[in-house]
Image (cartoon, rainbow, N blue to C red; front, top):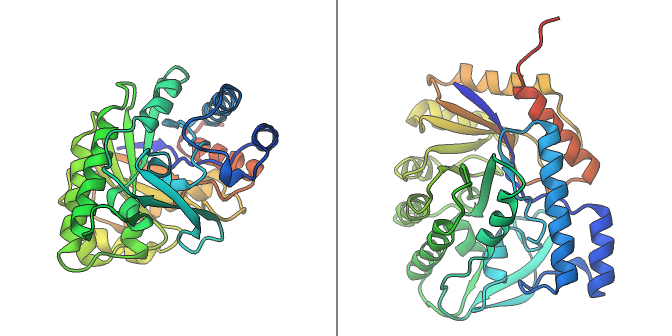
Length: 329
């Protein structure tokens, strides 16, 4: 069993970059990303990407994400920069006190390549690259459909779109985290739960890398969890910060994949866990379920965007130290 220190990406923007971008565009942060930046803004994001990769490498993380500094609209970003999507008014996702733009789909979701382009740039900075994408169910849940006209057809279109984006990822990508918080916060009902699993399966099969389907802000309902295990993913993620008991119940009762991701560092609380605490939480889970896992991804339970930069960096260091070989005194 190998413990792999990583995160879900979507990092806080460094303070100096916020100032630079505000000066360049003259707008608040929600208006900074259009998907077609001028050279000065693009250069700023290049600098931020390099800085975020350095922070992860210094922390000793085993998988390094691009950082998603351009993702002002968080998980909705792949849609908000799409040519056939109109960015609507400001909305709040998941009751997390942060506000984003509503992606309104008004045409076919054809290939974009936006995420792949960022990953190509990150591939020059690390040999341990991990991609992060929204899951199809969550992305469809966060969007407004004015084109497809049917929930089932819309989910299928979003899954096909994401599969095309993932297929374009560079060969350097070793792991893909597919983030599906809506499976917890707005769980699909009968029939829809199976379709959600099939949509995740389509995205996973497009990846030439290990795929982790990670949900958070609670535990999956039993049927949703059971259907998710049918998807062709290499690991399922569990948020042990928000609800450790129900997540352990799901694994003990229904099993899981050969590998798991464990959200053991709180992505929204400024209290920094010690490496010992992180190890204890992973040990507790492994003792509580009857499984011998191939890989355990030791990670934050949510994205880290919500944290101040200094706390974000301290939590990365805790994750890295938690899986580092212990040095005997």
